[in-house]
Image (cartoon, one colour):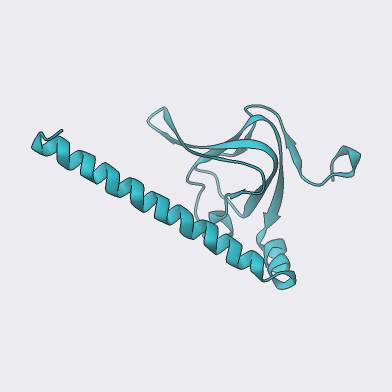
Length: 132
């Protein structure tokens, strides 16, 4: 619990919550502010998306024993709630709709990524054939 009796971790502008390549074992819920999810490759960053109030990020840490696939940092001041696997499972037992909402979120992201891959593939094909 933070000062003032509120739950969650207070984050300052630019503060890293998750670092790409580190082990992950929890997910985060944005309570206030915005958090940018950034993929780093060869010293370059690509912003994948921005998480806002009531959105989750880092959920793959609950389901996979793999390193974090992106860095997440505060965009301005913000607050996040952390849920480890044990607490996540307890919350699902209390409210089974939570599991559905997480799966729904992950499904939406897979659909968005599929759309992006399709668009990039079309763009590469156009460039390969010289079509505008």
